[in-house]
Length: 279
Image 1 (tube, rainbow, N blue to C red):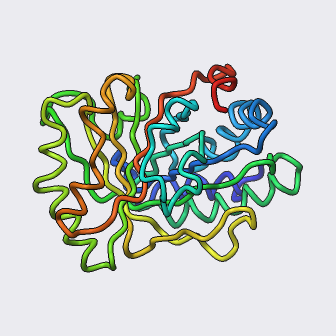
Image 2: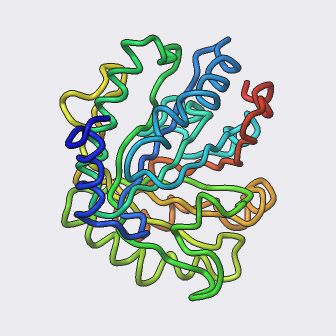
């Protein structure tokens, strides 16, 4: 490449702006492949999209895929979820960390590369985005204080499970109250002596107007909180004791309504493990 071309632009970009390791933002996307497309979708995502449509992008430094078998789907609640209709929809979940302060630059690249992938026939359309949003990282609460993996390790450490919890409030002011209670009281109490090593709290960003047409605009901007609980054991072994009743706890405080509590286990990259257990 000639001097002063795109290669030089990359060098200049690397020399300015934030470049820390904190996960300042996240992409959280829960998707339902259409019936009969489960294996094809999984192979497309594993073999192409996870890399070309995510990990190869600037400022996205960690990613992991999760799956909910039918057994795990049936543990979800509430039945009348505002997030997943029916509540069992969305059997694959992908989570990605973005460098703090780099969301705007990353989003520009993300829109551009997905437009290119779509034009080149490298998008699997036989799927439904149940819950897809870029998020602002608000806080992380740890069970063991300074001991153990940090939040920037969470998608690389071999956690055995993940629980996604989505809470809606009446607006930004009530969301601030909810976050204060979560940080100061609820999450610490729930983490104590639990199989969850940490919880990350997020609030959603709106998607840009030039997003891909198959991705719907984000709901809950201004009033939603998304929690990711990282578990050291399979959620099926601890579900009843540690993860039932979260909706009642929030409702009793009058701070909002829990619209989804959903357990997942990690996929095994490069395989079709669990594909036959989704229905």
